[in-house]
Length: 564
Image (cartoon, rainbow, N blue to C red; front, side, top):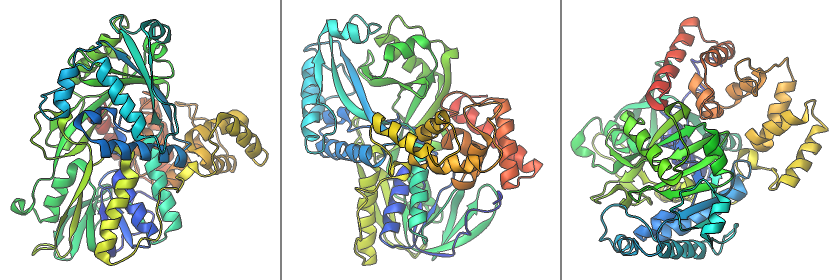
């Protein structure tokens, strides 16, 4: 494989073309393929590289959404959370969450006003309203519950649990949601699973939709410049915050023919390396209000502390980046809840920003805009010979059910019946992977019998790849291998496995999505040179192509992650 090729050539014909390879597009792609539909996925960048890579790493029901009366969304999200805990046990785990509470009754009236649609903007939440919310949360998850119900704790117990919290917190609440370790990897595993079980399903990265002419979509490979056409019966537009831009391209640039469906809000996060903060957070997430009533989160994640997030209207997702004012806001919120912990600018080792593809709304505050998902159907017209189904909104947690709902819409249009559901299908390394620490220890011991690899290395592979650790281990032991000089917890053969088997086509694919090196704040110039040399040897890049990829990486790191 070289940079000038994908796994296979893009076909000229497909029943369904899914445009957009974020988590929702991948879910639609998977569901349709499993029903036997001839489906092609086109993504203009890497898979799960937009908002699907910029989530808060939470898999949750959306406790805050109860304030907007979105009970159906919360119930559905809690159910999907529990499905993911079962289907992706290698990447999705329970997350104990601590809510510091500052007021007993104050703020109750404002919360009630928001609930009935009369409130404007965020406000502080009282213990009474938090208790009601958590009780509802438990009740909505009663049928699929896999974790304990919530509990309130006294000021004294709160001090024992989190002594660094603001002394102004009167008491606290503890409830459980979940977190996802490697969301981008979960997306690529779904693609690999789908292509393995459905040979007619094909997914392509770095392929942009340029134009449409009658029956044909014109595409361009953004890395090679190669162009071509594909003729679909139907298109699913799953480009998230880019939905309206994609529809404009599918309308041949005719703005009058493209109604606006999406209004994005920007969410930025900080990755912080600070020993005091890490110690204060421990093994739980702190779900807290800033002084203005906006919700923020902080928890330890892969050796650093994740802090987020913002919620700012933005019209062009290409302009999304974490601004200095956002950093100041999140650090200020952190000081509000942890007043004695000093976090300096130098402690921020990585930032990331995504754009939530929310529906167009006249809500007076971003927090009032629904986080539920929906779709719009546009019929064929004079410019294009095929209908377009556009996905709007959607939480990361609900990707499976959203994909199923859209697949049902497509199947109805095609006159086909559903063959199966994805509700109980394990994902990637979640297959045959143990659900508990004790079972994991036994699993590793059993696997070591047939592998020429030491236990710490297999444990590390299991942490990163779940049951696919066996494949990675066999590949690594099948040739000469050694640790990377600039990132010694990874080896040369391990990186080669990812490049050869996981559709990696650029340096950022490896450093930011197939591995967690970027999120951990460990990208260095030496590492870029080392990974670049490895990928050049594997993909056959010329010296000029390698230089081009280095520049692409530098541009992405500077624009999206504040790394220069």
